[in-house]
Each structure stands twice: as C-alpha cells, then as structure tokens.
Amino acid sequence: MIRVYNTLKGEKEDFIPQKNNEVRMYVCGPTVYDLSHIGHARSAVAFDGIYRYLKYRGYKVIYVRNYTDVDDKIIKKANEQGASPKEIADRYIKAFDEDMDALGVSLPDFRPKVTETMDEIIRFVQTLIDKGYAYVVDGDVYYSVRKFEKYGALSKKNIEELEAGARVEVDERKKDPLDFALWKASKENEPWWESPWGKGRPGWHIECSAMNRRLLGDTLDIHGGGKDLIFPHHENEMAQSEAATGKPFVRYWMHNGFVNINQEKMSKSLGNILTIKDALKNYSAEAIRLFLLSSHYRSPIDYSPDVLHDAETSLDRFYTTKERMEKEWPEIVKKKADKNEKGRLLQPFIDAMDDDFNTAFAVGHIFQELHKANRLMDEAGETGNSSALIPYLPALYELFKEAGSVLGVFNKPLEDYFDAKKKYIKISEDEIKRLINERNNARRSKNWARADEIRAELEDKGIILEDRSDGTIWKVKR
RNA sequence: GGCGGCGUACCCAAGUGGUAAGGGAGCAGUCUGCAAAACUGCGAUGCAGCGGUUCAAAUCCGCUCGCCGCCUCCA
Image (cartoon, rainbow, N blue to C red; front, side, top):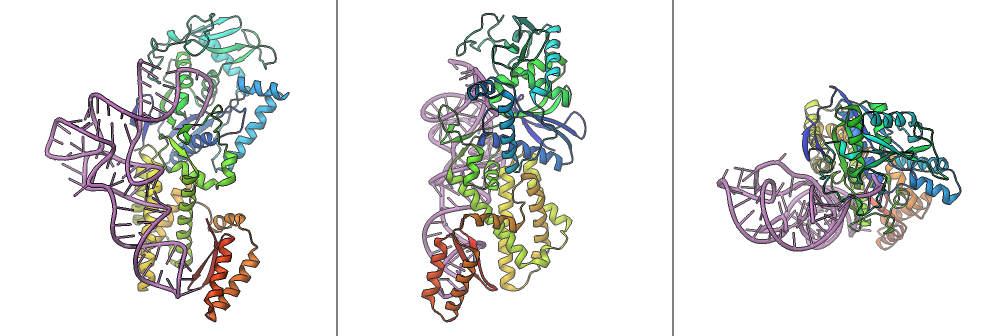
C-alpha cells in the first residue's frame, strides 16, 4: 500500500485513487518568462519519480503539467524586449523542454498552455458567476472568497486573520480585499481575448482549474507543486473548482520543498538564482538528479558544490562496482535472476517508495547492496569459490535495472557513463596509451622512478591509472 | 502578529516507540613495486536544550533556544 503525505490533511494517508487502477495527476508547471532554475528541476524530478513509480506499481497514470504562457511577467519582458508575449513564451518553453530533457525528466502525457485553453477558462468563469461565486466590475471578474466556506482549509489559514492588503495595495472595487481576479480587463499593450465581460485575459489561478478539469475531470487524484504554491495559488484553485463543480477537487495534495543556496531561498532580489543550464555546465545531469533524490522531496535541500561533488563521487562508486560485476563475473551476471532473491532485494526499495516516495532511503538501500556485492566479489576472488555470487549478482542487477528506471539514475550503459567523463581530460587517448605503454616497459625493467613519473604526469592531466591483473587501465579522475 | 516546518557525527542524509541506514571526508590496516579500486577496523553512550509519558523515546507530549518558509509574484 502506497502512503502519501497529503497537505490538506497534514499527514500521511493510504493512497487510494478514485478509479481502481487509474491515477490522474496534475502538477503546476513553469511560468515561461525566464530560464528555469534548479528549483524547477527539483519539482520536475520529484514528480517525475512519483509518476514513474506509480506506473511501476501498475497504475495507469495520466499526468498533466501545464505551461503558464499568459502572465504579467511575460508581458513585461515582451514590452522590454520589443517582442510579442508569444515569442517570449515560446522561447522559454523551448528552454524548459531542453532542460527537462537534459535531466531525463519524462514527458507528461499532456502539456497544456493557457493560450490554448481560453474557451474552457471563459466558460469556467461564467459558471462561477452563474453560481454566485463571482462578480463583474468594469470588465474584471472577481472570486468572492467569503462565499466559499472552506476557504483556507488547504493552507490552514483563518480568513479573519489574513490581514488583507497588509502587503499589497487594495483594489477598492473589490467587495472584499481577499477576493482575487478570475479575469482581468486588458490594458494597453497587453494581449487580450474576447469574453462576455469585454476584452481581457485570465487571472493566474483559473487557468489550472480549467486545464485540469478539461483533461482530467472534476476530481484529481494528485495535484502537486512547490510548497510556495499552497497559498494563494492552490487554495484559490480549490475554491474555484469546488465552487464550480460541487465535488471534491483533489484527493491528495502534494508539495515539494525548496532548493536553497547557502540556506537561503533563491530569489531574483538576492541574485542567487541558479539556472539548470548553469548547473549542467559544472555537473552531470545524473549527479544533479541524484542530488535531488538523495533527500526526501518534502525537505528543504541546500545546493552547494560540496553536495554535488558528493553526488558525482557516489555515481562513480556505483558505476565502478557495476563495471566490476560485468567484467569480473560476466557469466554470473548474465544468469536469470532467482525470483525469491530478486524479491528480497527489491522489497526494501518498494517499501521505501511506498512510504511517501522515500527516494533517499531507496538510494541508501542500493549503496548498502553495492557494499555487499563488493565484499562478496572480494571473497570470491580470494577463495576462488563464486557460489555465493550466484543467486545474488543477477538479482542485484535486476534491482539496479528496476530502481534505475524509476529513479532515473544508475541506468546508463557503462560505456556512456565513462565516456561522458572523457570531455574533462586534457590529453588525447592515443597519448595516454603511448604513455601507458612506456610506463609498462619501465615497470618491466623495474624502473620505478620513470613509472611513477608517468603516473604523476597523467594524474596532472586528470587521468588515474589502475594496474590490474589483466593489464593497466585508465580512468578520468573525478 | 497568524500559520507551517526544521535542528541526527567534520559535511550530506535515512530513520515507521524496541535500542542510531547509507554516501563523502579523515585515520589505521589488507592488497599493490608504488598507487588506484575494493575490503576490514576506528568514529554520535547519543539524535538543539530542559522536563514529562512509557518496561522502552531521535521517534509521543510540554516548555526553551536557534534556523527557515508561507501570509505578495514565486518550484
């Protein structure tokens, strides 16, 4: 049984989707006005893992992630750059898609845009007006928060204590300061759509309500996003949707924690935004993904060169061990895994993921088994008796394969992993081979001084030599 | 001010009332001509602090201290 922490209840609950085997999930995507940062990566990777795991557990999942392509910030940027909002949005949608692809984030089943959902949005607003939850003022449409009794249930806010207007200018035309815009009349230099209330554009929250209703129906199983979206975005979405449909909007609300930099939230004003593209210049996509999955998705995590370096080192440990399994025990690794042994190795992974998607424990479990594999291979190498490896290694291989397919790490072919590191070296492969030859000649004549000199020279250029029983191999220093 | 959360070894980090996973760094050893990789050993008598409940608490309750987030656009 999968357990999920539900923000609405404030605790973990058994995960039971409305339809037996089917999960409808919606995750808030980016507002496309700038390059995506590492926080977007976290949300995307976290929910990608959840999506993949649900499918792994046999659910048919319909996964929707939107692009917000109508927004104040997009309009502002467009006006600054003399471009159209559509040009800005298209540019950053493309950039976001590239980033997601680089990080190995699987494509959601649907990726709707606000601009393509306008009819539904307008109908949705009209429904709210018809049902008395919204009112029109000068071409704007506002949601009347006090009409919705449960307002505040998700963010645990008391409506009386929300000191409205404390930090934001109050619009005197609103009946209540807490009311929020469903539709905004267009001003000059703004994109607009025809509506029953005049030319205008949708407010921020209504788009999600309309998009997920169109694609997933009145009740979602999972609705996710960053913690900061709980209020007001998700609170308002819930108010809109439940007012319109009269049905529960979301069964499980899930929110991921932030990525901080030097224990501070990334923000434009602090100037500490780290884009995904910049992160990828210094670290591999797999390391970034492993870093994100190494703590629980709800905890805040701190990005630093140290932890990313740790992640790179961990990957090296993984692939080095996997290589050893394949190279030293090829005939054993290829054997069909024993069902019981495989189940025994997979169970802790499944238990961890069942428990609110505890990827950190899942990763830990893999390293624990890695350690055991190395120990058994050491022993087998020493005693010449490989019987202990026979049920174990093939089953472990299955764990790598299945956990790797869910987590999106540990799943590269060995050659790809080791080849990818070659771009960091400052010497040609031919030259390396020549030096290794020279060194081995020196070693044969016991000229240790020259042999060590060559080792040092190569290490300077980022190459580590390993003298193995079957010859000398080289690797890229991490 | 209101609401929510966090504080586990040098760093990262899991932890479901039953006696502290894992990774990195460090030290010592095995192996090696020397290394590397791997393995072995060492490393929190204690989980911010103080109380309480319990046969038993990092885990539950209370208080205190420190940090963070949301309440405004925000993953």
